[in-house]
Length: 101
Length: 99
Length: 92
Length: 325
Image 1 (cartoon, rainbow over the protein chains, first blue to last red):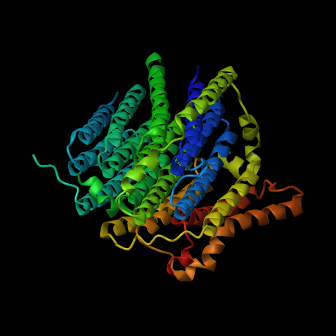
Image 2 (image 1 turned 30 degrees about the vertical axis):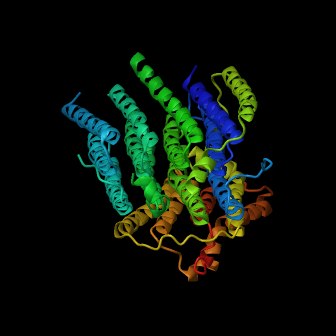
């Protein structure tokens, strides 16, 4: 096992934690946090696997991750704005996907 | 190892001690104000000593300048933010610890 | 020398882990944020030490930007998140 | 040598465990504010992980965005959400809020979702362990063509030359997110009424420094870690700091001048793409002799646009509406 594999496994762990939290939480801010952590996990797998060389690490995944980080922050900003709007309209920061009791 | 190496190790160790003190203070002190006091020790002195220790090993004056700039920046930001937190805590009526 | 730097890095990381306890304990929001602030400063020190080990000045830039931007988060906390509305929650 | 590699392992292991622990606590601790602070700490630790993975460019982007903007965004959205709740009525709200913050789906559903997630984790882990321990990927291909790209930092070469269309689309995504937010018509926040002299001084001292660092990162990106995104997000952080200190864009600049700044990056990119299409028959294929100049122009305009868009994303409402509430 090398350092790259260690970080790749950590990345997978982060991704799976994120997926689980995304599914079980009702509060939208939690879901946004979960999505961000999922994204970080994916970035980590990409970069860990890019570092499997003796010479310089592969720059293409690094460039993709930088793009990904910026896209993630813009998506987060949009999601937070949507959450605020939903909360302003319905009074609750969660989605109404279960039938009311 | 030369004399400057020994000195640098000494400074770095002293810096680490201040970081440890900051963390212990943050964990053990009884209220926001005293914890703030502990935190700034790590911020200002701890990082300062580590910067001095590393500056002795730096290859060029430019990198010494950059190290010092980082320290000054942390000093400036750290002290302003400590002030803001303490002022807000007083405004909000967070109680001070009395023996 | 390199071993010494790495030992220091490890020590600072363990320090960080201990400091995280304060985030969990609270009790006021400021305590949690202060722990994050200590986290930031320690990370700056770790970055500088790692930069020395690997001999790359790029890490000095990372540390510099780090110091600049952790200030922005802290300001956001003081100005926005820690407002008057939580008074009774905090003063106990 | 033995001790050295053991130390490296301990450091990497500690970072890995720390990341997993912070993510777990951030996602499952009962209080939302605590979760956000833990998430900010997670972002900071992530930076150390990128440094350990020898990706200082990514570390810079993560620092600029993860430490500065995401944290500020999350904290300010959390505060707005809490104020909505507070305005609805006192009494029950504190209890309600705490309940809603930790509400999850029914317990039966936890097991239902945990099983496939665990299976997925095992499958992915197995897949990673099966990969060959050495792979050069595209690093040799990039290194061979680096001379033709106009810059000497391989990551910048990939971002603005070899795969420039990624960057083009990325700026489009940023703009799209801003248009989305503006179209939601959220009530602007008017909470920075009180001025604080210390904060004012801090903002006055840090803003020029942030401008300087942004310009430096833009310049250094050609041959070392740095580049348009990092520069743009540092500049955007300057905007966020000014917004937090109570400064607002003068109304005379909030109309057309702001909008021009927002789109200048994307429009320059598209203009260059069209020109290259007419000239060389290929989208964004730069002639090696001029590549350096073209990349400089693209990066500078992109930096301005990224900064303006990020600051506007943080503000959340249209700046020219903020005066009439």
